[in-house]
Structure formats: C-alpha cells, structure tokens
Length: 321
Image (cartoon, rainbow, N blue to C red):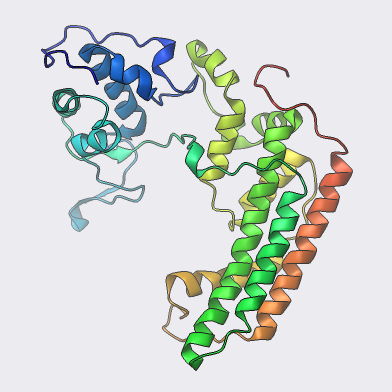
C-alpha cells in the first residue's frame, strides 16, 4: 500500500493512465495499479469511480415534500465515505478516502447520493457456460432434484412449504436455463453479440463519447453480459426479446408461465400467501405439470436455436466483426 504523506488540496486532478482500469472502456479500477499509485492518482481514481456510480438524487429520484423528501426508488440514500470505504479501504490510506468524500460533498453540496443508471460487469456474479448442451442438461438435473422434494415426509405444514418451494424452484430453473443459454451464445458466437448491440434498444440507443469508442468496442461482450447479470429473467417479455434479437428465433409463447410466476412471487415474497393474506395451496400434480411445461419449452427453444445456428462462430474477441 502507498505510504506517501496525506493529500493536500490539489489544483488539478491527474488524468489516469489506461493501466488504472481493470477493463477497457469502464471505470472499474485496477487494484494492483491503485496500491502503487501516488496519493493524487489514488484520489483521482476514487473520484472517477464514485462519480460513475452515484449522482445527485435531484437528477432522477422522485421528490415528495408530503412524504418528507426523496423517494429512493432506485436504492439509497448512499453515503460517499461509506461507499468508498467499502470498496477501497484495504487498498488506499484513510486520508485519501476522506479527502475524496469531503470533496464530492463540498463541490456538489450533496450528502445523500442516488445510484446512476450505469450497469457494470461483475465477474464473480457471472455465468460461464462452455458447452451448448449444458443448459438443458442442468435444467433436467434441477427438475429431478425438485421432483425429489415432493417425496419428503414430515409435518404437514413442512411438506406444504417444501411443495410450494419446489413449485417456485421450477420457475427459477427456467430462468436459469434462459440465462445459461444466452451466456453460452454470447461467449461463443460473434453474431449473437452483434445482433444484440445493433437491435436491442438498451444497446442500440446508448450514447458513446468519441474518446471512449475504442474502449467500448473492445468490451462489447462484457457490456452484454453485465446487462444479463442485472436482468430479471422472469420478466418474460425481456427474456423473449433477448432470445429473439440475439439468437434470431421466434421464441415459444411465455404466456403459460405468467400465472406460475405470480404464484412464485407469492411463495417467495409473501411466504406462500396472496396479497390478501390467503394461503396458497399447491398440489404435487401442479408441480409435475409445471415441470413438464418447462421441459417442453426448453427443448423447443434448444431446437429452434439449433436450426438458427448450425455452428457457432469463433469466440468473440471484441475486434473481429
């Protein structure tokens, strides 16, 4: 860790070199570079990191005086020093963190921060799938495990709860199948990445500064993967759009899963009760039927993909379009 004296007021914040970033085209800081950087460079890196992720809530956060202030619908409020400490306390001196936190608070006049709408890639939260057969294989394994739950014995309330959780698990297994399927093709097929970048509105309409264009270009795959990490895959219209725009297939209808998804929500978020507080009764037959619907759906999706993409292209390297 750098042991230079504490920071004094800086007339100028130094520009960071490319080696300061862990990924081109992002503001994620390289920890190894940061530890050896000067205090001024460390402060500049922390400032850029913070400003990329947090903003004055006046920009996009609803404000209602009758409710006592901001309605933090996107998360928050966040404290600058706490957020900087959580990310950098093991890498830079406390004086650097305090200096940057006080700077953003003084310059912007903000002490409670809202998140920006920028999405960042987190390698630890990603799915890596090396074989196109894996998503369907894993789906079947999960289904077998969930069906085994239905054979458990015990107190009636415990069995009812296990059955409800198995039902919710079937919906979650479908979500995971969709994510794993897209993860494989994003990693192994250039055309899938290109199709999403060109056709999906979340990418197509994104504005890029000219100075960032090469960094953005070389990180296209990670930008798509970051988007998938933050998707709610049981929002079936979003999942359907990803399949159709990325893989060029007309996905089977998700309509059959709309009601099961509502039940899943009640099971997970209301402990198996409706919004009116009524308990939800789920039978073994319902779980088996839903599992079969998911199996058929997944098999059809796989067959459609096989028709659309006979052989994957070379692994996407970010530069060979």
